[in-house]
Length: 166
Image (cartoon, rainbow, N blue to C red; front, side, top):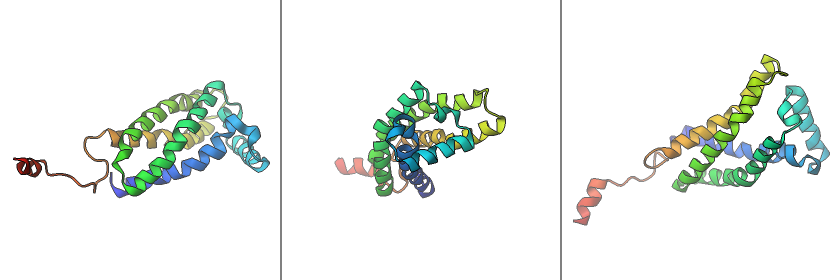
């Protein structure tokens, strides 16, 4: 991956940490948050008519619990791996990308098909949530590629390496 994509992914994961903790987490553990956080959450819901986060159904709560338990630790690892250009990001990146992209299908479908939302509200909400599908897919496709994921990762000249063995 080139440096622009690496930095974009780094920013995505770094900003996803507080969003997961202070926005998504409230859908499951709302009463545990300080009043200012709950008021900000309520303002978001009211302003953008996010009917999914207003009264999160059980299926969404289960997805958020998996986000807190599985994805949140990965965000920290991904930030470190992207900063240090660690190839060890490859397998966890595949797991994260496939898992997260799959979880976004029912969420985006909810907004696209919701009968109680105006078209403008649907577009705004899909616009908010769409990056959480696109960035995981980008990570998935990069990590699924053959060879190293970072452009400047040392490559071995296989012909030269074989010649030295004989």
